[in-house]
Amino acid sequence: MEDKDYLAALRQALDDGRLKIEMDYAKLDHVDSPVLVQAEKAWWVFGGLFGGIGLGYFLDWHYGVGFGFLVAIGYFFIGRRIMNERMRQRMRSLVMEDVVLWRKQWRLKGLALVVGEARCESPDGSWIRFAMAHVTGETPAA
Image (cartoon, rainbow, N blue to C red; front, side, top):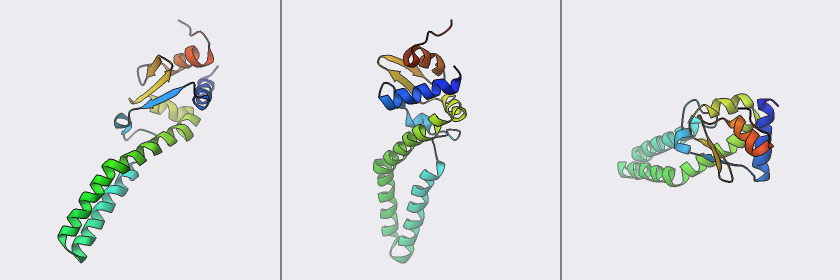
């Protein structure tokens, strides 16, 4: 089997519910990560900045500062959850469909493959050996 076949086996196990992918979003927040879109954070920053400036200019600076605080609170309580869910969706729909992107993501920290009690963490663990042993049932070569 080739690496694309093992990735397909991981995808199938994920769809079947046999495999779980744990994601550490703080570690996946890396410029080289295929699941991160930097513009998602920029939307919050620029929205708060320009909205606050606009309110401060047209109404009063108190409104601008208050709006900035509301945007910051909204980001920490709502925005980060939305961005994390989008990262999870991109992991399944984009990265797990392309072995080149999967390998690029696996070189970074922040992923763990879990089947029952067995666990394989990026980048130190071998995802192919893990797939062989716990997903396809093959015996990994020594």
